[in-house]
Image (cartoon, rainbow, N blue to C red; front, side):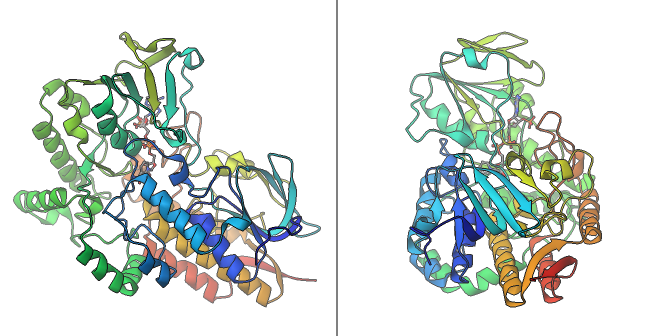
Length: 540
Ligand code: NAP
């Protein structure tokens, strides 16, 4: 049922975001007969793949697994060109999905949701968009992504810069030409590591401003051969099941043992094979790489040795060698990243040692000196996990802003990473305290979307007006989430996972590390027990 042309003031559901999450949520709810509208700030579908158009942007889960699996027809109709396709191909895929399922009529583009307040009297969400339009909906569902609010460092003088500057997550639609230019890239996370080798090929000179050196492993992207594609398509039912039951929503070769059970020679062979194969397999080489310091050091030492082998200049090797626990920041995959520092037109500045002081009209100044630049690229990441949710003024039945409920120091946040007490009929797709960014996102998104739409159908079929977590269930989930994280090395590293990249943000680890498969079973069990841990209120 399309809403075009209909009155839109009273909807069953409002969904925010038209990326992987929002598109599938719309499809499911519409199929179940719910009037649904998606609001999307961008000009078209795609979510992160709409915004992240920087050079070198590509996915780093195998594309045959980084896709929807809910439609057999879609799995058969779409063919990925390569293991890690570039952003335009992924965006084409999401457009294909939107067209195939005729989703656009129910998506309002170029519209940012400003606020969503729960009105207890009507048991409805009152939603306002930035253009002043108001709608009311029984269910309010966020599909805003976990890393969509750009972090642009508040560096003195940026407004005076006379060249062009960009953030990787807000890249212009027009081609940015670096030919012959003096380019600076600030940041060496996944976005920096993907873009630096590509920009280096065009720029006159590229200066990389690095605060924390990174471990990265070769992606080894390659075109798929038709036989592999055919076999994969034939095996999708089995692959789908394996992805759903897996730890990270990925299919990787992993040794089900500690790194310390192998001799150094055996370990080297395992790491070398994973390095040669490329991809996330390296991070899963052993079960305890993110659990045990000694095991972790074996992987870290291997990558540091690779840096020494690849990079020619010893001073650059020193600067590029990471010291944090391997894998506790998001593992990165690259194509010729370390090799890029052997180019004559690339230099590396350690801004931990010589911090950035200001941006000048003609470049960037550190405590050491000024670097003249024509173009400045901020690959400085995001206010992750909560930033985008907090940008919407979401208020509880008691008028409490979500931001306040989750204020710094609050230990309790969500039940299952899907819902939060005090906010009836609010659902968060891949919300904080679910596996989200530590999983292959489409797998986790599908799981949440299906759980949420099944839940909403259950409510309708049982004459239930509202659903809301019980405080004690939420406390237990948040505690469980924290205990699982505290047993790992993740919590010992400053990263965007912990909020350490945003000045003043409370440090916590809002990602469930119990694994995608086990997490799915927990959620399914909650549903099977009539939504155990939730309060349900009947329609009058
Ligand atoms: P990121 O991982 O947060 O990296 C940001 C980089 O900027 C870090 O090197 C950080 O240094 C640096 N930085 C931040 N503020 C700075 C400042 N004021 N001065 C100097 N340096 C500063 O961000 P990202 O690379 O955009 O990646 C974010 C996430 O998006 C990834 O972890 C991944 O989950 C996702 N992503 C995925 C893909 C993919 O699938 N292929 C591609 C891109 C991004 P510190 O480390 O010292 O904070």
